[in-house]
Image (tube, rainbow, N blue to C red; front, top):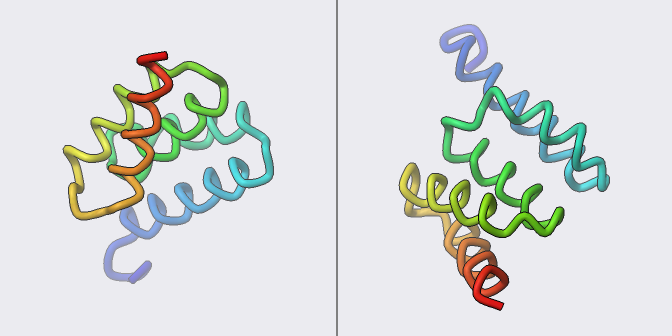
Length: 90
């Protein structure tokens, strides 16, 4: 994959790095790593998760909506968008 599609492989590697930082609770570092990928569904999803953890629910909704619009087949995108809607409504 990386030889045939180097840009795609780099996106996947950067997304995984951002996700790893997120899972480690390093939200600011994850945000920095993922920001260049905000236009991709996976990047928007992880940035939305960061925003959710930082209680920035409006930002989380916007980012998670972008993730769902980019790839509506991923159930986690829909699930976290629903959670963000609920928190924003409170």
